[in-house]
Image 1 (tube, rainbow, N blue to C red):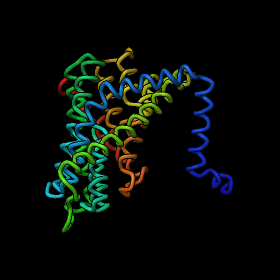
Image 2 (image 1 turned 90 degrees about the horizontal axis):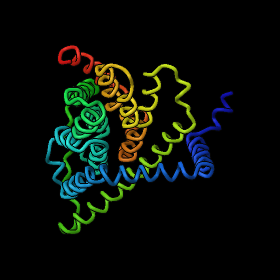
Image 3 (image 1 turned 135 degrees about the vertical axis):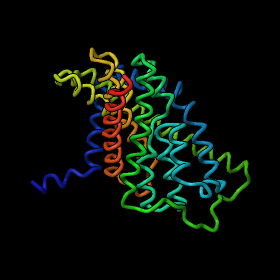
Image 4 (image 1 turned 180 degrees about the horizontal axis):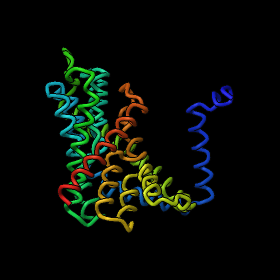
Length: 304
């Protein structure tokens, strides 16, 4: 039995899934094209305009050597809050690759610097999906409070996060060359994000088309399963469920803080080369989601 399972390595499983995806696209070409179109519209309409400027600025600051003169925790958390997923992960990876911080510091940072943006939680989820400003505010506040709590817990065994002393931290070249390189790097990152959005849009649409979720009788389990794949799909499904606003708020808070496999995939691609494993990162997101759900429950008892 051990020999049998040892043959199925990560690459072989990935190859098998990719092969099945190719078959699915051949058998369901219209669904594949529609999924790609929806993903590209989503990316071009909201993701690209909101993330691209932050990627350029973060890259430019990194190349100028400015980041290593700032407090890494405060800087990364602030940018992550303002921009949303997966900018925090990219900044951590950049600092790690340029040796501004060590691996332990990178692990502590990722535990609380992988957050959603306030526009998505307040506007898209709170007002757009749940129809409640108060629900959006509770989701947002509890999301960030849970992130800080998560960071405090994961940082308990370590010391304070500090930058390494690097004699030559700035990238060589003129300001215009550095800005151009920052733009090109940002475009590359946005291309990776687009690929993940297209991939998981197709997966979720395929699951919907095959009615896999219909086998799950419990409504919360069905929605949670959708949210595991893609938080926006899960939150949208929760909004149309005939349950109380309080229950919707808690569930959406959990799903947004976990992020879904699409966001996790994007973040892990940004963290490539940082030394942070997928297992560790997913564990931090599970903890973040649990704290967010707990804090949302407490906030609802007080304010709703």
